[in-house]
Amino acid sequence: MVDLDAATYPGADATSDGVLRLAAEYQIAAKFLADQGRKGEPISLAPCRFVTLHAIELYLNAFLLMKGIEHKTIRALGHDLSARAERAEEAGLVFRRGTLSHLKDKSNREYLASRYSPEFPATLPQINRLTATLNDVARKVRAFTAPQPGKPVTNGGPPGKARLAKKNWKRVPFDTEELDESQALIKIFRKRGRVVATVTRYEWFEPDGHEHTGYADLATSEPRPANEIIALFKKVSASVAIDSDDLWDAAWGQLG
Image (cartoon, rainbow, N blue to C red; front, side, top):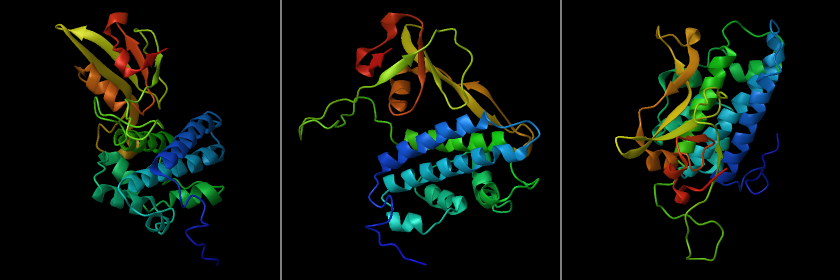
């Protein structure tokens, strides 16, 4: 077996931001492949499972790189999501109980089954459990990349001239209720004279404490100052609904 030198290993010079963007592309592909699944044919979801697992792996890689862990160390983990989850926990990433249990469960050999087995063991998690794990990992990792309110970041301008990051936000009607599973909706409105916002997105619920009977459903956060919510989503995909145009601060970016 050829031991590739770090300088020639694909992705050896990749930045955490580059790996994060790659993970997001795989997440988009996973959503598309999930829609191609055929009822009663588990094998039709094999590509979705594989791509979803790879997206999870890439998000965890991006986080570990953010924390200063070397590429060589990450490569040594192979495709072991359990080992990655442990390293990410040690570095400060906090998972939901269901997500952590899923990532650390080695009994079903999910990665290998998704790649090579035409018959899927009954022990494999449901596809919505796998999707919920990806969405949770993606949100948690992206949260670490979100700039703090007012914090300057460089955008390729002249050295020493930092400026605030600008973002184009997708605007939707204020009464929007239907969401994609991977999308978050920020609603901005006025409450007791203050401009506040809530976040609505799919969350994973386990009412009986067992992940295999859990389900994904929409959940809405408590209102918080709008500027705090916007700051959390500076580098995370989200749609925005505002109760009136005067509530939008131009410093937050362009509202389309």
